[in-house]
Image 1 (tube, rainbow, N blue to C red):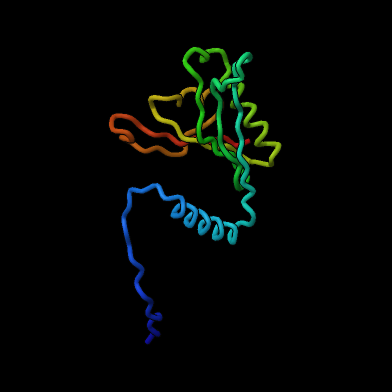
Image 2 (cartoon, rainbow, N blue to C red):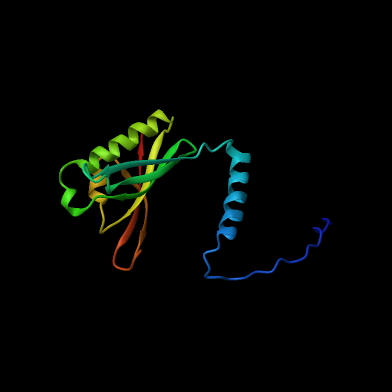
Amino acid sequence: MSEAPPRIEVPRIEITGADDPAIRAALVEGIRAYNESQVGDPEIGPLSVVLRDPESGAVLGGLTGKTNKKWLFIELFHLPESLRQHRLGAKLLALAEDEARRRGCIGVWLDTYSFQAPGFYEKQGYRVFGSIPDHPPGHQRFFYLKRL
């Protein structure tokens, strides 16, 4: 007969719609500590490649992400319609990939929607590794990666 686990006081569970930085910080710290115990220092570093107006310096577009566990995750990527079709997106992506290589990354991953730019990423050598149908309804969310 196995020994029963020790009794614990059951934590209170709550649901909130609040955007509480303390909740996020506690969760991020717990995940970070566990992940570090499994794979070592995650080496997280932000990365941005920005397209600026030459006169005002205003941000016109670009991409942001972070390098973590030897991969670059591209979180945001935007070019205004007027700057598309001039290979600027491909150049920004290539510069981000080059910087990821310098940081020792082995790949890049990102997500996009069927109504955004899946064809663009495929032209740059990215391949789908997963998708969510009807996210949002009538569309699809794709997850792409590229080995460096």
